Image (cartoon, rainbow, N blue to C red):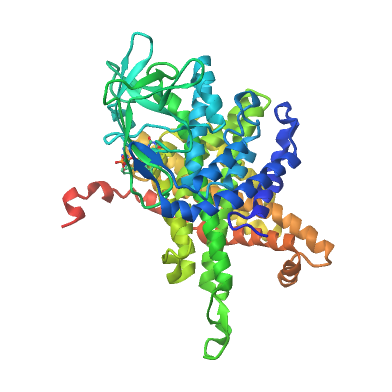
Length: 621
Ligand SMILES: Cc1cc2nc3c(=O)[nH]c(=O)nc-3n(C[C@H](O)[C@H](O)[C@H](O)COP(=O)(O)OP(=O)(O)OC[C@H]3O[C@@H](n4cnc5c(N)ncnc54)[C@H](O)[C@@H]3O)c2cc1C
């Protein structure tokens, strides 16, 4: 039966027909793996997602988290799912076997976890643990790795990332948590962290917090920040648990969504006895934490995709069942039979808009993960750098574009449900509530946009950006000779050219002293680039699909240009239906959404400064 979480056929299409991720198995690192292994992993992921994780989505939302006597209790229904999740070895599955993982490629890992991220409240616990464990594996001493990571990868101990403070949200450099050196080489931590996901829970026997703090006397700003490992229970030499560390969970935030995820306010060191170990070197905290932040940015982008996917599939099912109004052809006949709302053009518009966005977000996320695989296994440094460059450029797009579009898809799904969508009896309102946070945490989307234009475009003197444009151009060249795709390919190329032109334009503004133009237009630029990248992956998919569709048409004695005959074939042939959907989605997006890029170009080139010129007093009377 088709899943309501994600379109499994599309997942397979992106992995194997579009990206060809099985190519990684030619490398000795992945030589023991094969498509069969990948599919086995994905089948198991679907099973645990549908049998155990999805059923806790609504229940976890209702129950929420509780704080009693300093201990957080997660929704009861999470316990069984969490135990099975850990036993299945899903935490750290891409870690190497000697780190406790299974050494699977990032692209396959992303596909597997796409099954889980629709329930971000649940997945936040193992996800935060994986990131924290990875940080210790990368930067910890041998002793720290031995002491902490084995139990974290097994899910017996949890993990977090503790950056944010009341006066240090976006401005992390402004943090005031301090670390005091001790004579034995350890530290004592004092300060308050807020909004800490999975800050405490009753799923594991210990919690390991990577905490950002400033060692007394170190410089202000991000430069002076170090990172520490702060366990809930100190760990004795023999691995048993020692005393409860000196910190207190003071509060769990009451939130709009992801109610099952405990978002904690933590007071460290009220009794001057909060034990901490330095991770890596002093004053390297931000550099080290960036590994976890980058992983989290991709994960939050995936949250956008997963929310969009589950919302779209539910809306699609609803529009096929809900009868309302009559066919357009019988508008004037009051006794005409009522039809499913999927027959109304405006509903079809919403559905195809959602479908094309879900498809493109999935392709962008998997491609980015695939770039990390290729970066790892590429034969020489230049190749490695090329793949890293694509990933660098795409990371803020995955985080910000996917989370914003993901939210808009959930909102459009609600629109398809009409009034019922607004009611908690139906699931879409939860999808929308749970997704909203994705544009805010892990660096709000406006900050991602500044990262894209301020840092990423100029990386390696602009080579990464130019390589990305070149890659998109090569897809256009590959498919523009297919008759039915020619106009789509031309439009995508125009979008790529607009990006190149805009990159230059913004750089020139900077050089001419008009640096406020790029800064003020960072977000419109990010969204513009997200649309072009989406158009590119959809064209790529349409190219692959069109060739397969032509083959199917020929096998069935149909003229590939005969749309009516193809639609007839699609009724009985699932592959034909799927490939037609790919071409239609690309056509819709490239013809209807991509033109928004022209408007963005026009708006940015106006160099309008009203957002800066308006006096603060004039925003409201
Ligand atoms: C549910 C939830 C879970 C979270 N989990 C964690 C966690 O596990 N660990 C953790 O450390 N933190 C966590 N956070 C904190 C989260 O990362 C911050 O909320 C986020 O970084 C924004 O910080 P802030 O809320 O202080 O907003 P502010 O920094 O006050 O920003 C408010 C708005 O102003 C904009 N803004 C601020 N400064 C600038 C600037 N210089 N330029 C342009 N725009 C700017 C922002 O983009 C944002 O839109 C979580 C938050 C929530 C709500």
